[in-house]
Each structure stands twice: as structure tokens, then as C-alpha cells.
Amino acid sequence: MNYLVAHNRMAREMDRVFTSLFAPRFYACRNGEYLTPRVNITETEDDVTLTFEAPGMDKGDIKVTVADGVLTVAGERKVESEENGKEYVRSEFHYGKFSRSFTLPETVDAEKIAADYKNGLLTVSMPRKEETKPKQVEVEVK
Image (cartoon, rainbow, N blue to C red; front, side, top):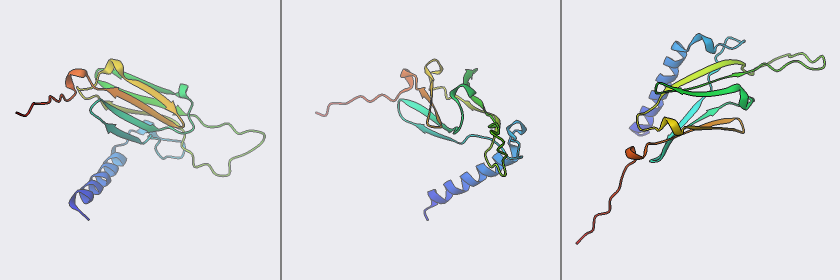
């Protein structure tokens, strides 16, 4: 195993430990666990993209806001009502409210942030400011 792989595993495990220790209590679900949608963050020269897992939610139950350089994604996965005399024998789905906030990098153009919810994934696209994109100038070789 190379050093970088081992280092990344250790960093992920430390992040998991600290997240579980300091998780805000308002994420608590009815079964005492936490509803915190997982996120993937990717970046290119042109943008930064956050992709959240949010299965079983309606688009209207998710709110994305930007204020004072902070992007906040909040929402609620509502408890399904019991129908036709059916009673849950076991329910492992997590329900409740959640909120996640991220400080925006100075390179992001907050006015052009866009969000799309499809197939249980919320994708938040954050384009970079033109002046912060890497410029490449071709130099003529003589």
C-alpha cells in the first residue's frame, strides 16, 4: 500500500470520528441516528460541483441559499404516512430535517450558482469567476 492511499484512509477515518463527535443535534432522526446527506465535491478549471445524496425527497423539500459567502443546503425528509391499516414492523429509513453549510472559495461566482435535483441527487454547480480561471498563453518557440 502506498503512502498516499494510507494517508487518505486515515484522513477519512479521522474526519468520520470528528464528524460523529461534533454532529449538531438538530440532525437527529426519530431513531436517534443522524440525517446528514453525504456529499461528493469535484472541481475543474471552470467550476466546483457539490453532489448530495437526497433519495426519496421532493424538490420542494430542499432549499439552497447563499449568504455572506456561505452556501447552505437544507431540507426535510418527511415520514411516510401509514396507509390502509398497514403498520411498520421495522423502519430503517432516516427522516427529519438537515442542514449543511460550506464556505465558498473566493474563486466562485456566487451570482451564477445553480442547483438541479434529479434521481435522488442534488447537484449544485458553482462556476469560477473568469478572472480566477487559469490562463494559458502559448509562447512561440524560435
